[in-house]
Length: 255
Ligand SMILES: NC(=O)c1ccc[n+]([C@@H]2O[C@H](COP(=O)([O-])OP(=O)(O)OC[C@H]3O[C@@H](n4cnc5c(N)ncnc54)[C@H](O)[C@@H]3O)[C@@H](O)[C@H]2O)c1
Image 1 (tube, rainbow, N blue to C red):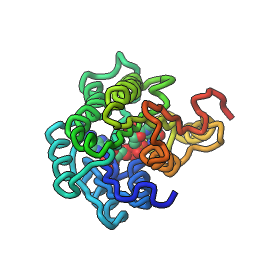
Image 2: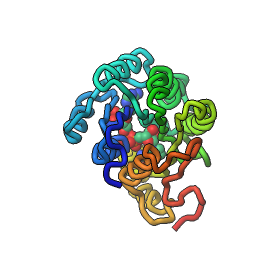
Image 3: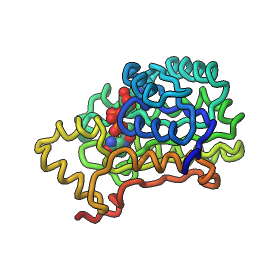
């Protein structure tokens, strides 16, 4: 799919590392100009340097509306347009049932994973209207089927999925498409941290292979390929789509 995104300006949150970094590199290969918005500015600069060309690294915490506003203003100052916003930045801790989750942990998760979508939409909407652009949300399979001991995270990803559908309906009349990708497990720094927190990390690594009927826990390239597709003209009649990119994990069969 060479050049599927040629000339597009894509704002990608959490693009410095993990799934976001793979998406940034894939968008760059397809000809897009990528603005990485990440709270880790050094890592964002490293990924932008790998991209080369016309990319931008911006330091911002996506849970902070003023920081998001400043970052999106900088994107518009630099490129003059926004064709897509990929809301990918997210956190997954704590691994706890709801009654053990502190108010701060709950608020952090909802602000980072859900309210961030509100902020990017508020501040990018006029630009997306002008470009008849796209919004893409990195949700999660657990937002569809639940997960033990991650109530606040599951709630945040369920909210992202519902928001995707609501926004798709609201924005269709502006020709803005809104879709979501639901990974199961993907090897990233986040998943490595999660494994390290579990009682038996080696068993968990094997478990992560087994939950995917296709037989392995993937790296972020599989998500990036789906993201390129959803942002490209090949997906021009797709909106409100909640796309599992999960090796069939949500089907419930284990190897
Ligand atoms: N890795 C998985 O198995 C998996 C599975 C399903 C869904 N997801 C989702 O995919 C997305 C990316 O996850 P990942 O595994 O690549 O995570 P990661 O922790 O490996 O990378 C996340 C990136 O987002 C940035 N980030 C985190 N919080 C931020 C904030 N408040 N403001 C700005 N930047 C912030 C980090 O600095 C980092 O660069 C998340 O939304 C996550 O919930 C991941």
